[in-house]
Amino acid sequence: MKKIDRLWDVLEARYKKKTKRSRGLYLQAQKVMVQGGSHSLRLWPPYPFIMSKAKGPFVYDVDHNAYLDYWQGHYANILGHNPDVLKKEHERFNPENGSLHTGFEGESQIRLAELLLKQLGHKRWKVRFTTSGTLATMYAIMLAQAFTGREAVLKIGGGWHGASPYLLKGIKYDRRRGFEQVESAAVPREISKKIFVTRFDDGDDLEKVMKSQGRKISCFILEPFLGVGGFLAASQEYLELARCLTEKYGVVLIFDEIISGFRFCPSGIQKLYGIEPDLSTFGKLIGGGHAVSAVAGKTEILEESQNKETKKLKVLFDGGTFSAHPQYMRAGYVMLKHLAEHAASIYPKIAMSAEILRGGVEKAFSRQGIAAVCTGRGNEIIRQSSLYMVNFPLKDIAYQSAEDIWNPVLSDVRMKEEVLKLALITEGVHVVHGGGAVSAAHQAAHIERTIAAYSETAKLFKKYLF
Image 1 (tube, rainbow, N blue to C red):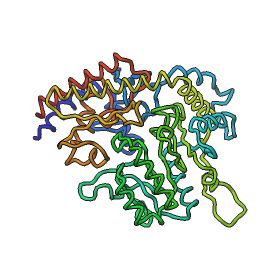
Image 2: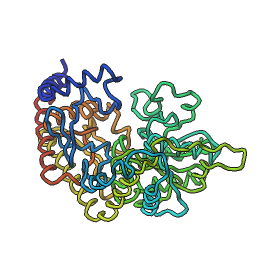
Image 3: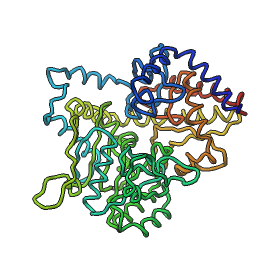
Image 4: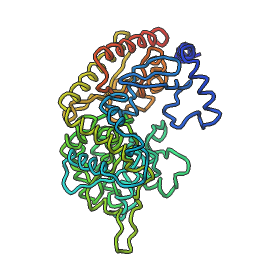
């Protein structure tokens, strides 16, 4: 038996002992739901604990265990779980004054749209809301295709933009093909052949792709701060080059800020870089804990979704049943307003907490002679980062792209994704991809407790693996 499998058995036994009711409920779930749930990332091995409640930095399971949580609603809860500022707003909304869905236009979406565009600071921009990041990026791609009359899409290797067929390529690393494989069955071949992939923050590769395919490409979609691909920040020079090349070849530049929007400042990080894309997608934070996403950008591109007296088909960006739900819009407005008004206290605090945490985690493993590197620190542009991801390098590398993060020859992916997660859960800390997002609800004592949990985990790794 491999050393890592022996450690896994120890952790699994500990976990099963403290989560007996969760295990029973999960077995029930498997009888009625595919894989036992509705989101694969939440269904970790050997089984997920079943949540009972969440508040602030903590989430609690049905077995009465408390966990310091750094997943925080898929990074959506920058103020922590169920913050009082939003709870008070929810209490104002009851079935008599409009919390249930009606299917009519409401004033709250106007206020959220105005505030979102004000914080972005771009002129001649408009916005349309929908309900998920996948839909926002899908619509952004369709708008770009209609606007340019082209079909090909350029994306970053390792970039995740949701489950739209236009973007289901180059997400997970493959030993043979790198980031060139299609990620899902049922993606039409004619679509997958028109998805091009380039390396993150690699100007030479971007120039090469644009030179050979630029006139075919409708849009270049990227996260200025790479999310699941590794919590890496793009350089100023790279984004300026992306802006220059897209303008040269008539390509629509799309910034996916589903994760980064309002995470580092009370705006998109495009404002920090001083670069105006053609379209941007937002989600997570802008809904105040609700199903809200948005496509914002230049009016002439968004107008591809309007009815026109021409023979040209419009983009059917007509919205869904729950688009711009009045309660969701109001919660989003309260969240963005709160972030704008308290930016000077919120962003430095969570960034400092995350920096202490990143340093503490690295030291915890270093004391045991184990190499561990935290990404998420940002750069000279993004100075207030509250995100962190723990990586276990197998070689002496500087983490600069998703290839460095997810290539199993360079980094121990299983140790980060499975073993570290289960070890920390047994210590009362919940993470995803080895880390996560620090919220305003995480106080100094919580950070210290988290570092202590990593320290105990490092000792366990040392005992069984090294």
